[in-house]
Image 1 (cartoon, rainbow, N blue to C red):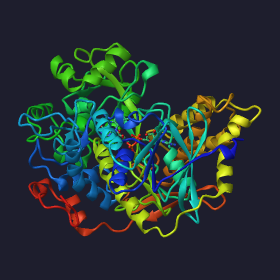
Image 2 (image 1 turned 135 degrees about the vertical axis):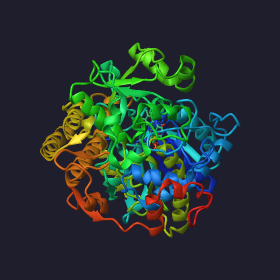
Image 3 (image 1 turned 90 degrees about the horizontal axis):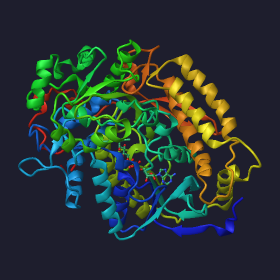
Image 4 (image 1 turned 120 degrees about the horizontal axis):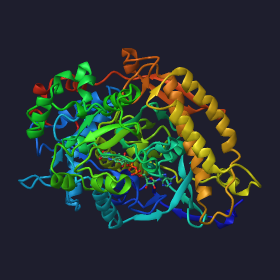
Length: 619
Ligand code: FAD
């Protein structure tokens, strides 16, 4: 066991765990509010997963389509989320996103421009109008660059990078700090704090085929859950319809929706644009049902109905899966995505430079002259840590959450582009929420040595064990279980099998051995991440078993279609008193009438109505 007298200790008002878009925006806010802020991240600053975001950041700026406004954005988000979104969060998101994007521009982000010099906006699935502010297909990189620059120039913010948070520390049920370790040396770090903001991203690494980075091991879900916070609607996992399928070494890597937004179409092995056969009734009025109209949209996207390739991600992912299962797939088990026959090479290289290089270098495919092969890949966790919509505080006093690790905002399915705006909006609000909490907190929390010792023992067991199982082998086993039984299409017996397998895996996890010392030891990092991956996997599986309907990112073959009674229910996961995971259904409050009216309005009723801000909001 590590020498406890050797623990390095620092003290902050607030500790932000995670330096992606959400964590950076939260840290900037805390610093600007005059709080001493510690920013902890397990990779290098600037390398967070947000850097991978390609397509853009959704905000109703109305630069390309002046008819756009926050109400249409809110309506699109609710419809995309199958009305399971937290109403207030969706409202705050739609009303605040334009300000957050403009603020980013003021801080130095260089977005692509319209011909009149405004921030350009591109089309994306589920958004009625061109709405995504973007920088080619490298939007996340520009956002991180800007936020990082702002962070290091903000007073009061200290960055602790390549430092992994292990457990949250509590004092009488409220947050008291974080125990962490430096990945390079294995040395422990105790961060005492009056508030903690969780901004750790998602948990897609519990699946083998995923677009997610190595950081996405669900640490935030696990840390918050371990401290007593509730997780909400974990069953909703988004499979992005277009990941690379070939060669096997790169399977899962994302092919941005921007390819379809910029005119790319999906075809099966017979060369058919099969998406015309999969238009759901409720989207029929807004979706082009002939090739001619879909192509007219290419010329003026504000006047014509959208091509069916831009239906929401769940619809497109299921359609692709069906084409493959029914024998109309591409040679490597996907379908074809063709932009080469629709746009010239110069356009493709300018608008989609990363995609061009990705396929050229990783698959030997020139997308300016050949179609890509694509198929669904685990992309985003809609579920996450439950928060209060205005303050972002979780059910644990002093613990806040924002970005992909928090739940509620996206309901049953997230629209592309809504994550980058989500993390700006709720990163900002969680900073304000934490600052309020710190100012009002009467006591200085005390960290408990017994709790620290127990946490250190749990973390170092894999190093100290005489022998045991290789953690990488266990991770692979876990990913096989999730790919096989908790994938895009689910059913009761398979989910139950997954739970049996997960129980067996818990025994293996308790016996993993990371050979070597704590310095420079990736095997040990993997052993620690396994704990979080397991909690993520179990929470998703248990919640998926409870929700007996198909909605958004959650499809049950034994319960096809949405069921009205389930629209009124959230699925909540908590840690029971005995330590076992508990799941319950919770009735949702009725939607605020004024928001329900907007969500159900026709576009004609909303167009031109958005200049007015939502109640209680700056525009
Ligand atoms: P991240 O950016 O992932 O940051 C998480 C941070 O937490 C990291 O700094 C990590 O080091 C840290 N961390 C994690 N665990 C710990 C721990 N235990 N201790 C310390 N630090 C920890 N969304 C859009 O809206 N538009 C897009 O165009 C888009 N494109 C995408 C493309 C790809 C390939 C992918 C995978 C996703 C895309 N998304 C997009 C989704 C979006 O990028 C993410 O949802 C978003 O970036 C999440 O941001 P975040 O700040 O919540 O987390």
